Image 1 (tube, one colour):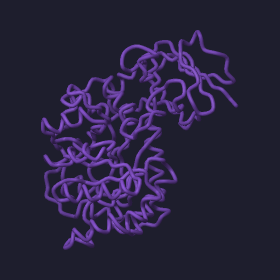
Image 2: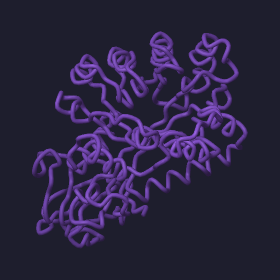
Image 3: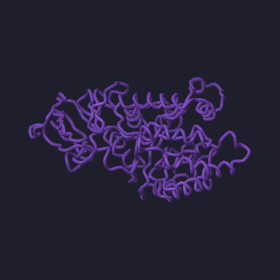
Length: 389
């Protein structure tokens, strides 16, 4: 069994206050020892134990690998024209999600997997070591199941989102589609998924329909999460908290009662600034949530329509610039916060016993992620102790 020490780390973010300074557990002039895919030791470089291999960080910063707890990566096609029209102030009515549904249904398994891997590798180069991804662009029993089967070959965090929108095949009978989502489609998809999700929003699924989807999924052993309060005030956050959802995602339009519900629950508020950036929508108020005591995660929402970015550093910069977060809070939310949203304790931190997922920055401090937006600062990535970039 080979042991590796990464030494001479200028600033190490552990996300464990017991190991270092402040909520990020910052350790200066630090080292970490990796053994059998996990962190075996953390401390000052001068005290690092002997190991088989050493890597000199050259006074650069090391952070936990990013945990992207919300993405939609099993899709085909492109919606460039839609984005261009939106940014140019022109009307465009090509179909939105339905455009992606048609392209995804027409794609082969090999094409869908190749596209997933392209985005996975792109995210990894930017420091993402754990990602969740969803179905939701098939909307038939066969297409939803194959999307999840493809995703499950590449991540443990797979979400069944048959209730993304009402299938174009059921436009005249939404109730029948809910029956499909909670019946035969759920039966086919549950073996590949850990989570069940629903887009609770005007134009998608109302509170009663969302409750039916999440309770059916929970009865099959899937853990709820929910797209909530993205476009308008609605019942999504309250429903998610009531049903014990791991996360309520988007959380852009919140009442005081919604904020209180999140602050007094285990449901994580997952904020997705890429969506607001790409649609010129109102920013989520992270400051309000954090000050109330809610747990906040940051994720990319990578999808071809409303947030086509796989860059967690970009989302950190947006959160600091436009959502009232400090650089420390944004980094924590993109790592430990994402882990909380996935109910994981082995990722999102660098402490003895945690998984050895980490990123080396070509910068002296994690603050540079927001300070130098758009600059490719991630120079090396380890996943489960293996260098993958």
